[in-house]
Amino acid sequence: MSSASIMTAPQHIQEQQRKHAPGASGDFSWLLTGITLAGKMVAAEVRRAGLNDVLGATDDVNVQGEVQQQLDVFANNALIHCLGSRGNVGVLASEENENPVVVRDSRDGNHGDEYVVVFDPLDGSSNIDLNVSVGTIFAIFRRDSADTDSPEKDVLKPGIEQLAAGYVLYGSSTMLVYTTGDGVDGFTLDPMIGAFVLSHPKIKMPEKGNIYSVNEAYADSFPTYCRHYLHWLKSGTDDTVYRSRYIGSLVADFHRTLLKGGIFMYPGTGIYKDGKLRLMYEANPIAFLAEQAGGLATTGFERILDIEPTDIHQRTPLFVGSRYEMEQLHAFAKKPPKV
Ligand code: AHG
Ligand code: MN
Ligand code: MN
Image (cartoon, rainbow, N blue to C red; front, side, top):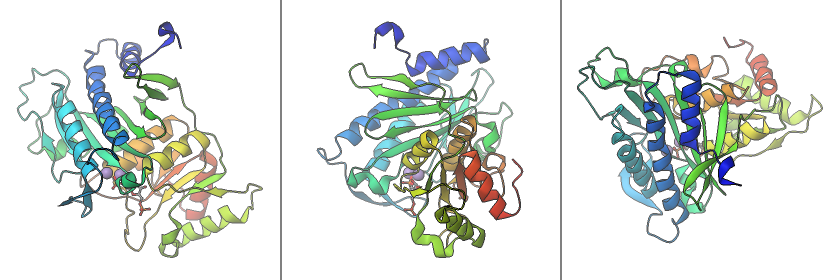
């Protein structure tokens, strides 16, 4: 690839900004470089995980009640450091922190645009010791100018208010996939130049796929409509023979769904009645990307992006995928969602 044809993520964001917000201060692209920098730091650590002593669990349990992996902590610290130093981030909310991290608590109005970033620093961390793909998921909101007496209020916004969302996938290559509301673009980290280079412009999710992705170990406790739908997928009633793929890292399972189509499901289960995945930093960013690529994302009954959050760590059932498979699911759910 000649240097003339290279389009890096920051250049791309600048172009997006010029196109959509000519008057924007360039703050946004500067903010996104905080995420790409953290992504490169985590990628370097993940790629060497077997060599330096970062595998395995810590002695700590996070707010989710899950044992923290060492790389959860590393990734969390990298994001807080890289985003906290951007100068235009007011509040950070992480899966690994019970409460929001207030980067700047006084807003005298002279700070220009300020942003809120919510993130899952390392998604799929139970896979990290097994050399299976993991990821970082993020969403960016504007911080309201009106002072709020609690940072939670800055964070608790419905997914439709996301300015941008995306993920970094630490897989066979390291990819950044993000949207600012004008489609979905994918960038591959070129280790030779240390930059995320545009490799998947304007990703479109296939209208229909032939893969379904769900942890079938919990199938007996899925809602009835969901069990019926799963049976329908397997019975080949619509002349498609569906295959099952489940990696156990949301970012990897979604990335495949984004590129190949089909459906990913994490319904309510006997263990997690509202589903295991968290709304703010897993379901919302994934839903924004899915819709921007032409797919759908719902709870089975309600559009994910319309959910009014009440808690930073609240969970939600998540069904996300191609229009065809999602519409079939909604038919089984009998109450078509308001999408
Ligand atoms: P995290 O590692 O951030 O806690 O996320 C793990 C999530 C998600 O990545 C994946 O889809 C899901 O857990 C898998 O859950 P099960 O092991 O219950 O299938
Ligand atoms: Mn996760
Ligand atoms: Mn995580």
